[in-house]
Image (cartoon, rainbow, N blue to C red; front, side, top):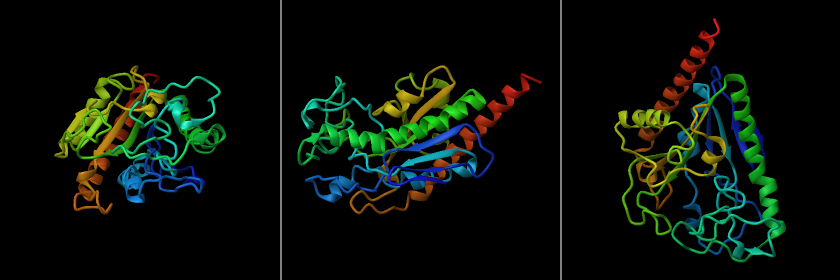
Length: 289
């Protein structure tokens, strides 16, 4: 394991390595000392993808690499574009034009929680935001890019699973507000970050375990998929969202009786995707015999 204090854990393969990476960008619970918010901690902590790091912790045993962010996404969100900034949150003028697309307040720097509560107690200076980018956001992405670049160089392809969890019912700030959600949701930016064959392959593994799974609804993916995936089959990047209700009590933040079953689904996905990678490597090698 490699540690960048306060920024990430990188768990390297403990079995024969394959070009598969699991990234967990929103389970961070190390709140930086300068983080301030007017909302109760329980509401703040509800925005964390609780237990997702534990659900996918067996990735190295299957030959995959796992990267886990340690900082909370409410401080700075690694799954948003670095220019997706609400200009009204900044004290002063950002040095380049922003690309504020997350109008619901859930951009790089959250202005509200998923339930619409104001998250910031004041505006942030340009220097404060730049510090968050330089100390947390950029190192996480540099490490993730480095891992996948090595895989791409060695094998000509990789599979990325970007792992999160979601509420059981759409929150007021989301497009499906008030609607019940399936057990799992996979996204590939509607075909832009992976082939349809790969995302359907993962979906069928989940369904075979007895769970429901939607594709590109209510979520399609985020910056991690946009930045590291494409549809040509060399950089397959899929978002994996798990319904919180299946594995935890959202009021107490404690695991429920469904946790082991959800973790077993993750293991089934890991086994299937790493085996797919091994078979693909074998097919490539056989072409040169």
